[in-house]
Amino acid sequence: MTSADIPFCASSRPRHVAVIMDGNNRWAKERKLPGVAGHKAGVNAVRAVVETCARQGVEVLTLFAFSSENWRRPEDEVGALMRLFLIALQREVKKLHKNNIRLWIIGDRSKFSSVLQEHMAAAEQLTANNTQMTLVIAANYGGHWDITEAMKRIAHQVAAGELQPDEITDSHIQQYICLGEFPPPDLCIRTAGEQRISNFLLWQFAYTEFYFVDDYWPDFREKHMLKALDAYAQRKRRFGQTDDQLDQQQSNSLQPGLTAKTSC
Image (cartoon, rainbow, N blue to C red):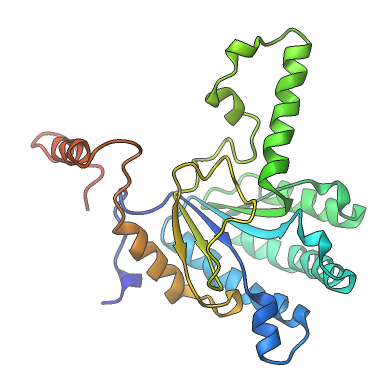
């Protein structure tokens, strides 16, 4: 029996997985191909990860597709990325909809072409009521931008007299942060051997577990995703508590007469 056949129990399965898809350019360079070839090859990895997460019962999958810093890349590469993004929206959204997967896009859309913005909105509208899983694409997204935009909205409330500074809490900020309606990421995967978060989901990663893999993103497939989920299942998430407290909670959940929702 392979890990693909073993169902994850509720306590060991991440509800929300975030992925920093890195290494497309290096993958192409090693094969003496143009950079855009790596991005095109990365689409296959996206399909594999989406399908695997959906089968494993992951509720939310967030993919870092294009950061606010990526505009600094060569103009021809950025143009190719925009074209690839549009093609992916045109070709893949119907498949997502057929498989009951909701698409949600976060980031500053103002820099994208009007055509691309229209396709983004149409894709979200088409899949809005799907319930199998939510696929979030972070495009022209940055953690600093996310927090800054939230602070602006709260500042407007304060200036209008609708909110007092002392009333601002973590929960209040959470309402205005991207993905505020979803559970925070339990697991973040980064490919290509890099070990940094690159301005991705800075607020949301407060208690996220990190998993780094050397493989380039175009080579990432189901077996890599399952290995990451297996590794996550071995982690002990304390959230500021001690091991003794966690052990006691686990013991209480397994007492006779109680429903052991967190046990396999």
